[in-house]
Image (cartoon, rainbow, N blue to C red; front, side):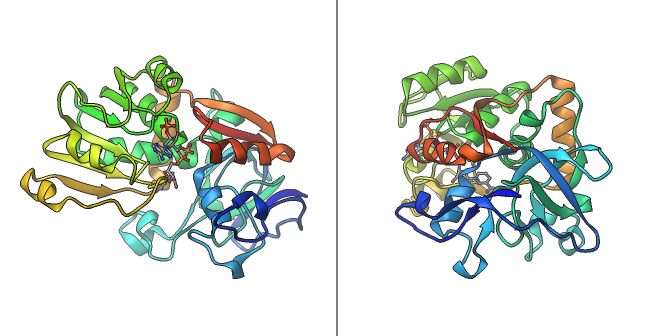
Length: 322
Ligand SMILES: NC(=O)c1ccc[n+]([C@@H]2O[C@H](COP(=O)([O-])OP(=O)(O)OC[C@H]3O[C@@H](n4cnc5c(N)ncnc54)[C@H](OP(=O)(O)O)[C@@H]3O)[C@@H](O)[C@H]2O)c1
């Protein structure tokens, strides 16, 4: 089958390790199922993998990709949950299982014509979502859902700030946050992306580091070092930063004086549980939420999608069709 793989690690030039070509078909162990992939979506995680973050060279070659929607062996249309873990190991939440992994970390991922996953990782795809839309949900939208509705402590009517509006997670935060009843403010380096964020439902937009009209209840961080100081300054006393990523660097000054004096909380968030993905699918169906897709490419042209993500030229998700 055709697949997109990480063949070697190169921290400086991630595209150098991208492999496109034939790969052996998966053979599912007991309790796992083969899914024929109809659409898969790109995440920054796939770039990190090519750079050697979260994976070691002895796992290579490995098929990239966390997210997919497709058809199972019985012909059922499914969405693939990307977290492979044991919920019983961690109080019902597989994201807290110390042995959990995401597809493409230990087991082959979704950028292929077929992928094999544990049976519990398959959820029915709502008919109102296309395969391309459904393939955006398991990582970026699930992460945004958990950040907004589980980890943030915000309530409908709260004001939240989304840093780096153009990203896959960031556009999901704007769309879901708006529909969830938050007042959503967003920053972006690009004026065009700021305008698009308004179209998506942001209430106000700002250049990075701008002084805000008032302090916010919670900040959603995916950018990291480049925006961290602003995130700390944007919060009201007692406010909370929810952080799921650090694209621009992971070690900004902690500014502990500000954290304790203003009684701020810094909360980590990663992916979401299978139950949360199920609720996200229902939320999309009931509220008419549709993921923002920047571009759709055939899997054979995956390198173009990776290049656009590395260049930061995206507004929303890159989807590959198999
Ligand atoms: N923990 C989890 O479960 C989880 C899940 C998904 C993603 N993540 C992480 O979250 C991050 C975003 O992922 P993604 O897939 O949404 O990536 P993405 O689509 O490439 O988005 C990255 C966004 O970050 C902003 N950005 C990048 N570099 C910046 C810089 N130097 N200064 C200011 N802004 C910058 C950009 O926003 P503007 O161009 O609009 O300024 C860009 O649109 C990644 O680090 C990823 O690993 C974590």
